[in-house]
Length: 170
Image (cartoon, rainbow, N blue to C red):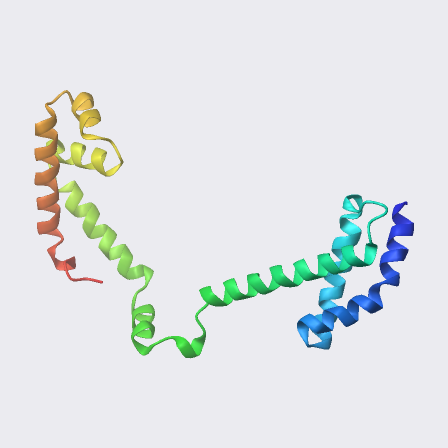
């Protein structure tokens, strides 16, 4: 069977597909959308259809799977989206007051605190922050691993002291 014959057979089943779609959607417009999606998939995946297979059953299976996938997608989307009515006043205050300007000030304070560290503390601390392991920092700086740990600890304490204003900041 060639593509033109297949397409005409698929179109012949569109009325029965509409009735079947109404069982799923209970809405005329949604049923038409489901039929359209089904027909599009059937025509797109013409190569997957094997001659001798029940075309109507194949189309019904496509429709059922399309409906289920769309339903799952809708449920998943609705679970991630918070509706306006569901946002609590506390969340509105947080989202309305926190902005990028505040973040910029925080980052400036962090950078100032980092630059106030001497090199002997700054270098191991930033290397550790960037993901280096203690032994890698020790080898790179050619100092004992205990010294690396101590310098990182001292740098953390200095950073905490400098940034103590942000201790209870949300």
